[in-house]
Length: 377
Image 1 (cartoon, rainbow, N blue to C red):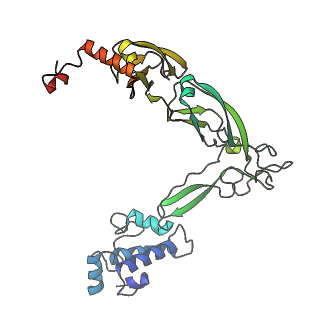
Image 2 (image 1 turned 180 degrees about the vertical axis):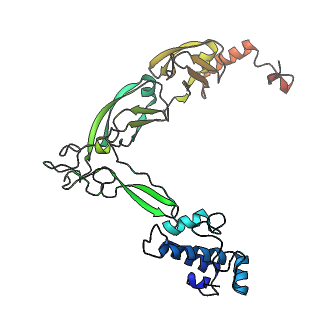
Image 3 (image 1 turned 180 degrees about the horizontal axis):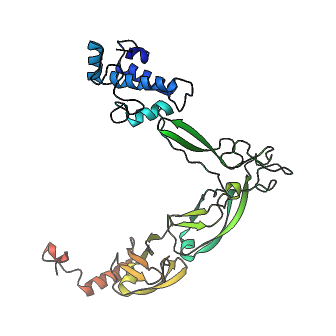
């Protein structure tokens, strides 16, 4: 054997597989001809390759440890081809990832760079609570918001008044930096965002004292929003361009107004219909009556037919919530609750007893089921 393979890799004969691999990576990086231009580096690199091919293969390593030769070893001790072709499969036991790791420290990332242009500002949220009456009518409402606007002192440039931005000396205004790494696999070009100017291509030497170089400052603003009739809890209204202004002169984001609705003392909303309970004297249910009842847009007359039963539900057409998408309105439903007197004067009692006799309500019932309503008619 012309050369000691363990000596070539600079490890002892009891070195583990991991130690052999680690040594190979170190030496391959050191003597690769694309990296090391010194005389003899290429020949040293070939020796390191061949030594690792043998010692990374268990069968070849065992053969070498016992006899001092390998299966493909010729009389010269390193037969079997020259250059980079002496490896089966190109790199023997080393995978593509192993070779890549050896030269890039385990990183296979590709970074995309580029000059950063104006960026659109962030959207904002505003929570607005309405009454059910406001929902039924729709309205215009003034609200106060705080958002980021272009700095009034530097006009959004970020540079102190009287000064201006300068071209970044690190990337020369490109906003990105290109680096080239030469490896045994060829040359790899990597483009990254310039860390000095953050991709803008410009730097601020003297920042504006008002906005600290950001070009934006927080301001209070009152805006009027139009709220259509029929909105409901969770409805989201967009006000274009009233969000934060963008950096670098970018357009402003939008303002989103989220609607919630207060619980009403009397009305309950279900979709675009509203429900209300009213109490009426038992006499009005018996005789019928026209009564004034509240609605979301004023009063309306409810016709109670004679003989209306307690808990009956009557409808007022078109007195509900306007349809948000489309025409028309929902309805108002009125549940009638009978109000029975708890105390009667002697005259009232005589009149009711007389009424009961005329109706035959005082007759003795023959069966307890006489007062039970038939379930199946």
